[in-house]
Figure (cartoon, rainbow, N blue to C red):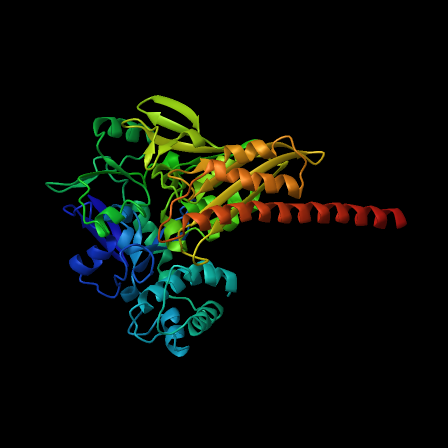
Length: 488
């Protein structure tokens, strides 16, 4: 059984197929057709809806935009589902809807409901208009008719002139209703053919997975759901991780960061960006905000995609994984997790419990992603590079690429050329040549093998030029400050 609010209506569902997406639930069960299906893969944003749930203190609502086409119905438990039909009140348009109308932000109208819902979430999470936040909020919504200028105008109007709406007025009532919904039973819900378990902690998950070794683990579902929406395959047994509270923890220590594998990419952002700004910048380009709100760091690793954005960076940082099977735990270096294309060292009923990322304050870490478009796109090549220097000599080098092989992989020959050498351009040119020994890339519709190799080499050159310039500027700034102090 699952319980949630659809707008202000409490719904209790007992006989839903666990493979049912929120989009199809809206359109086929509730007959709410304002939410559209454009791509069924999380790329266009036409299906965007908003989930509201109590924040950590459970005293306020947190509003999150998601792709309904990739979200299974299990994710609704204990939350409020808000769709474009729910925004108007007494036949008066919501301020986000009115702004879209006033600014002429719609033509064919097919994508408009998704844009409106992204604007609604943006408005709820912003005190005033911020262009960069608006671009981020709308990066997962595609429009082919209107163009984005009037939509950005609508966002500015909606954020700067927002008024109290029904969701603000009813927030206390909504919180009371949501907090009264009991935790979903670990037995979840089922039909005759399909079942979804819902453990509430990692101990229950470990036991459930041992008893159901053929089950598929469902976290955000942004990749797994494609098997249903794109390949039309049934998933007979699912184990939903969205209620496993301890696997959403994030603990910061002096020397490391420990992130539960079920924590969303959005919620990982601040901690990763504080220690590694380049990691934060790459997360801004990781798919779209809707995907980051649902997708998890553990899921991005576990699916073993050769073009996943996080693994090359985590390999370069020397991250480790804590794997668990039953009561047995083991830790391995993340680079040892990947064996071959879509093959890993994970044993039957074993899952990633947490990711441990060291803090290296003295290293020079950078991340690069090359793709056909800036936002909401898959990498052709992704690079994480992390060097430790002492007196201008490279003492340690960790360089990992995605998109260059069947797995995310370190460039071992390239690292050997750099290690022990002076930090200078000629050494990096030798490292570029060594890259040919590390990888024989494949050609596909994203990039040719020649392009990938050349881009990989050019990214190494880019790293040297950027880092060299930063180090010079740092020295000059210290020198300038010293002179000012001396004159004073």
